[in-house]
Length: 368
Image (tube, rainbow, N blue to C red; front, side):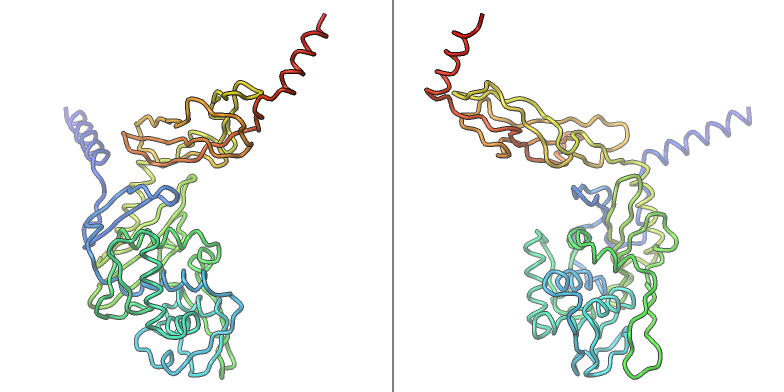
């Protein structure tokens, strides 16, 4: 009887675990998304505007990579030298490469490096911050404003967990951004010293979480503990954010663990796979094969059956050019469109001409 009772309790607990998400209980706001499709795997107050402390520097780094060159010399001005808070201790007039400044920005969270980068890219901090806000709008961020390149408290400086995850997904498309935020320690020059600066990444997940990719920590008294994070397992990459969260690393690990347990990447069409035939009107061939150039895949919840819808014309008028886009394929899970890829004509089909008819007549006449 006692064994049956214990077994029942264990089974009930298992059902309870499998039926409910681990929650980012301590976070004021949180989100977890899949890298490629942006599918939201977990969220909590994800659209609430909040200060984000040094996670601001994800956008600073992204703009620097988009508009600068890593070998560029970047010189610290008096403005950079005088910035309070975390620092890589730049001296006024000291010069490092942009790559070295970015390591100081993202590993050591140097506020002085942020100002030096902003002035190098845009000429002054205010212009750089306008570029940051503009770039966020271009991505589709709905409630993000930047007033600083480093995240120290300022008026009109805020984002949402949802917007910050979108910014980070964009940044992670850059190989140099991935390299920098995944670096645990680095050594860069230190003018006036017989030794180099040693930079240590503040993101503990790099050492404690399997598959961790980075990305950025942040803290101010006003914003609380903020963390942007990413990890990859079994072909699926997740990108998330917790804002104002005293248990930032624990909560990040929990919601990622649940996502990896509950979702998996499913490929419905491979790269360069045929996706059907479309009739050709007045063409030298009756049909043309259509194919993908990119795999159609998305994170799918365990236990569900994804479907693919191909959107194609009922007929294509000749001529058809090889490689022209003729439609798209859409992956659905639980009625939600998660991913779509264009479909292209696999070959050229010429329009029927007098010469074509003549060749057919001659071929029929010559046949035995």
